[in-house]
Amino acid sequence: MCAGCLRVAAIVSVYFFAKKRYIRRMNPFFKKVISAAFVAFAFFPLSAQELGPDGSLEDALAEMADAGEPSVDDGMQREFRIVMSSQRFNLNPHAATYSSEAQVLDALYEGLYSYQPKTLEPVPALATECKVSRDKKRLTFTIRENARFSDGSPINAFSVRNSWLMLLSTPDAPYSSLLDCVRGAKEFRNGRATERDVGITARDDRTLVVNLVSPTAHFTRIICHHAFSVKTSADNVFSGAFVIKERTDNSILLEKNHNYWDAANVHLPAIRITTSDELRENSFAFNVGDADWISSTFDAGVILNKNAIRLSAIFGTEYLFFSCRNEPWNRADFRNALIQAVPWAELRRSSLVQATTLVYPLSGYPQVEGLTDTSAEDAADMMREARKSAGIPENEKLKISFGISALSERQKKFAELLSEAWKPLGVDVDVQVASDYRYIESIPGWNADIFVYSWIGDFADPLAFLELFREGSTLNQTKWSNERYTQLLDEASRENGSFEHYKLLAAAEGVLLDDGVVMPVSHSISLHALNPARVGGWFVNALDIHPYKYLFLKESRDDIPNVVKTEKSAGDSV
Image (cartoon, rainbow, N blue to C red; front, side, top):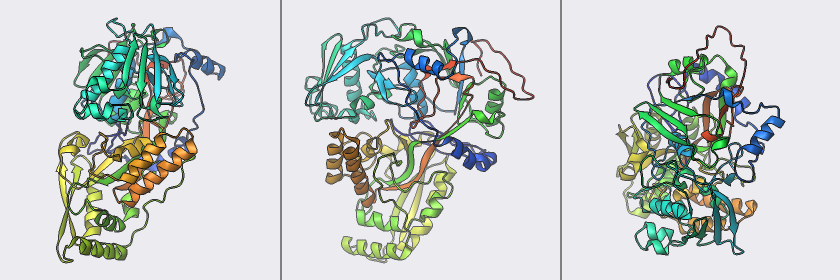
């Protein structure tokens, strides 16, 4: 679901996220406490907490009670108030790409499976079960009898099929290629087949059959993503736990969907999302109880209850990449010559969790040799050989364009460092600046050679990153392709055992790094202000996904001196 994200202001502050890409900011206090906070929170243990077999909250809540957490008191539930960074939300699940949008879309729409809020394991949602054929190439889903859209109309197997075909028909839908594992899906989305050729069949109202090209062990993980949720072509009709009641430029009010199949276990009557980059004002609102959860846009030094600062490492990576569109940068020998000259220590100096590889090192994932070595002499030799091979004179100046966001001082610093490092190689860096607020969306039509990207995995598997560079993937922003790389990904997708699966993916990552396509900088972190003594159903997890349907308020007494708390009615905004 990829990767996460971002907002900027010339003032102080923290790390910004919004699914799948980010621009970061730090305030002075945060710089002082971040190391200690990281030790406390970054490797927060993730223990298993399973849902009931029907995907409801009942078993999860029972486990909470057994663990000493109070059961849900429905009398305490009120409008829940969330503050996010200022942004223009795209709430079309087929087209949205940012992590902040994913948080909202997860509340509005639902698919056959969804994320367990703590472990992120796929759990039944609109489906009650999935039967896998002996050859593992046919999946049969049973749809819930009580599944309904927010307008009361039934959700059935035909609804799911129509929604997935709509996704495949959406031009430039970022995640549609993740269904290429389905027979005929790739050909259909590329205009080379018809709907009848796609291996998605509604056998009857309650039975959906999916025929795969080859066994795909992670398929139920893929369809947890909001892109594969069920939607209709009608406006303001939702399949998830909440609906949109009202929307303004800086606020979205969600109300509980009473036609939702699991409505009995959704406890919040409403959620108000306010967007604001006023860090101190947001922090004050949190201190006095006018905000229940702030995602990134706060001043950690102003937050009174330091236990409410939730900082953790997540399954994400910030990296630079070559677009491989233009000569000579579409050649690995030229790219690797530049990479050999990169001043890695300086490039990564301000990163809390430095990255030498693309994939965050998961448990059991083989160690991949990262990019750490800097040698101006070796870089000069490599550039000399590359020029000779390409027939380019040694004294000819080469130009490489670097596309950055006008909102990011960090990206400007990257450009300065690389410009200085590559001048001795006879390469001039042409910095091109996008003033557009949504930098990432500018990349596909931007003819620059290098960009900065940040990605949070859409499921906890290295394939969530490596899919970004697969030939033909709608997520691939490069023109790079490699037959061996594609072969390794295909082989890994067929493997059920994690050891062989990871081994093949690590080999694929090695191919990617050896070919000089990416320059890893840092692994991502998430930062939130949320008091776990007051809010239940919110868990630190590797993808920084916190489904709203599980949230509830609980009674708590905090001893925070000199704070006057205010009570607001459900109709009031932050």
